[in-house]
Every structure is written in C-alpha cells, then in structure tokens.
Image (cartoon, rainbow over the protein chains, first blue to last red):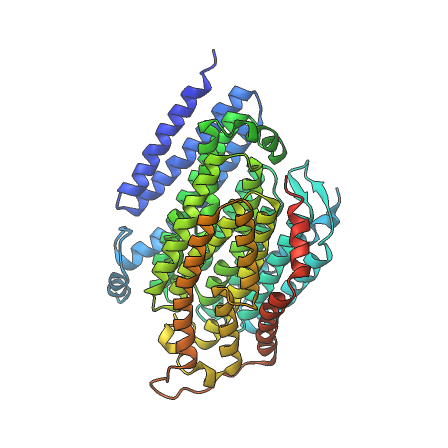
Length: 106
Length: 471
C-alpha cells in the first residue's frame, strides 16, 4: 500500500512549521541551526514522498544532494558559532558589539 | 560533450583552483593580487568571446544560450571590477587574501552556473554554493567584532531562506512531478489556479528574493553590508544582484504570464520594497547601510519590470540589472578608495571629497544621479524602460507609486552629494592618490554611466534578444 501524497505533504508541512517555529522562537544559536536543519529535512521528506507518488528516481537523487547541502550548512554554522562562543561566552543571537568588546579583551 | 561551451566557467574554475593552492602556501598579497586580476581579465575575455554560443550540456541540465551568456559576461565583468578594487584589500588580514580571492572566484562560478541551470537540482546547488561562499567572505572581515556577528546573522537568515526555497521546490515537484524547467513550463501555466502550485512557486521565489533583498527578506542587507569588508560588500551589492535577476527571470517566466495570483503577490512585494527601502535609507548615516537600503528599493524597481511578465518587462529588468551593477560598483569603488584603511565610511567623512579627489567626486555624483534616475544616465534609461513596460500592462497606479519613490530617493542621494561637494571638512585632509589603473577604471565607469545613458540602443537590443530565449 502506498501512503497518499497528501498525507506526506501534510507531515512535511507540519515538520517544516515546527522547524520554522524553532528557528524564530528560540534565542539560542544552536537551536536555531537545528530548526533550519529540520526545515531542510521536511523538504527532503516531501521530495521522497513526491518521488514515490510519481514513480521517479529524480526526487530521491535530490534528497541525497539536500543531505550534502545540510552537512555544509552545519559545518559553516557550527564553526561560526564556535568562534562567537569563544569570544563572548554566549550563544545568544542578540549579542551586540559591546559584549564582543568585553569578551574580546580576555 | 562540447567543452568549449563551458569556457567561461572553466576559466573561473581554474582561478578558484589556483587560489585554493595559493591559499595553502606562504601568503604574498602582491603576487596574489596580480594573479587574481590576470585570471579575472581572462574570465572577462572568455565570457565575452562565448557570448553568442548556444547548446545543452550534461543531459540537458545545463543550458547555454544568449540569455545565460549575457548574464555570464556581466558577472565576469563584475568579478573583474571587484577583484581590481582589492589592490590593498584592507579589511581582510593579509594572510587571508588568497582565501578571499578563492571564495570570490567560487561565488562567481556558482552564479554563472545559476544563470545557465535549467534543472531544479542544478539551481539549488548553484544557489547554495554561491550563498555559502558569500557567508564566509563576510566572516573574513579583519575586525571580528563586525564580521563574525553580522556574518552569523546573515548566515542564519540565508540558510532559513534556502530551506524555505527547498520546501517550495518540493511542493512544486509534488504537484507537477517535473524537475526540469522545460517540463515545468508545460505543466505550471495550466496549474496556476491550483493553490498548492502558487504556494510552491511563491515559497521558491522566497529563496531568490533573499538574494535580491526584496522586502520581507531584506533584513540581512544593512547588517551584512556593514559587517563585510568593503570590497565584499561591493560584490554583494553589485554582482550577486545580477545573478539574482537572472534566476528570478527564469523562474517568473515559467508561469508564462497567466497568473493573477502570482502577479498580485509580486506587486505587493515590489511596492513595499521600494517604499521601505527608500524611507529607511533617509535615516542612515553610514554609507554602506544607506547603500543597502537603496538596494532594497532598487530590488523593488527590478521586480516591477519582472512582474509585467512581458518580453518588454523582462528586457527592462535585465537592462536595469546591468545598470545596477555599474552604478552600485561605482558608489562602492568611491567608498573603498576614501576609506582606505578598510573602515566603515560615515557620510560626513565624504566632506571635501571634491577637493581631495575631483575624479572620485565626479564618479560618485554620476553614480548617485544614475541611481536617482536623472537623465542622461543609464539609471534613467533603465527606469524609463521599466515604467514603459509597466504602463503597457496597465499598471498606472504602480508606476505612480514608483515615481513618488524615485522623488523620495532623490532626497537622500542628494544629501550624500551635498556632503561630498558642499560640506567643509572639520580638518584639512590630504588628497587621495590614485594609481593610473584606478583612474582609468573610474573614468571608464563615468563613461559607461553617461555613455549608455545617451546611447542605450546597443545594450537594449542585446537584452531584448536575450530575453526572447525565455519561454
């Protein structure tokens, strides 16, 4: 039995909203990065579902590339967060330049 | 496979590979700069030489036609100009110059691929590659205080925008079952009444609107411009906009003009972008922030041309994209030369510029007149073409709103000009010395702005022929 496409789109839509909520609401850089990750994976789920629905392999090929893109995104994001954390002792996205100065003088 | 079609991309790829190696060796800023300028000049030569080629590559995933080749030539010229501006590359630590050139080359390469991509996967990959290289370029700022925080925010907004775009593409694929632009062109126009298809297309466009800094996705622009090294800010403001215009034209032309819902969404974004950009720019005291908000306003004008969904509108948007490249580059060139230690330039610091360097002051004046749309400049011709295209579609109110916006924008452009020409500096500053090539480029920019204002026919014919390749 094949799950109907609408159900899959609903699931991925739900996942996408959760990810977006996480990105917008959490005041923690790591959690925001996780939220973006969940949004990317929601798109991947939708691609796999659509690929099954249309009986094509192209959707699944795109998912593999999405995984690579997501890995790149985490690499850059975590590297930047790490530098910021070392300087400011904070993972709050609202930090301002003053805090940076204080941390930078350590 | 015909590799000759790929010459512009291969040249830039070669430059990227060269600087990948050089970045691992002992840094030598002088050598790196000379090599970078040489490679960029080769890229310009290759891109202009290949301008009339056409053909399909990689199983029809990659299309080389006049449309993509004109954009590639523009991108290569922008790449050369920005690299040329890096002669002292202040704002980036000398040990990182190699990386800077490498990332600029990779970014240009991926934007060239974006202009040619006709498969959703190719579009996604090219867009992500160009975004990621830009994020790291912002991080390269020597004063970490600026580069890191703004770079991190730019990255977070950008990654969210690309996730939204991917989700939109997934919906489009779910509704149509097509991943190639040619297939989508056959299927989408009939489905534009389907709410899912319109949602998918709008979400997809969100990713490209982020690149162009259109209203709901413009928040990164002022911060990223302020945080980035001056030359990188010039690259983001001038060159990356050209790529955004290319891909937006490809995506919007897919609907083939029969979507009122899409047009209405675009109209709202265009009007709000212009208004928000122009009103926010009035309050700015930092030159780069002012340019960022003026970019938002110009994104609105560009969108106005695209949402006409007629060849005239597409051609006008493409012409204006080229105009934005020239105008913005000239503004950033003047700024980089004045702020010669790589600091963020305040508008007050332009005081007495006409005495310190008459040539730069003249270049700034022409660029600002052009941005404000005063004849006879390229910016005036571009705006005129866009408004004419919109009038042909009957968008009278829209044109009136845009005209009102042009008047508002005149105010803050003239404030900058007043600082450069009329204000007296607090203390007497030494005159700015320019090397001979720098003078030549400044003169060339002035000549282009005025020359294309008087004789736009050649470029207009070229872009009109190019947009005919769109469906």
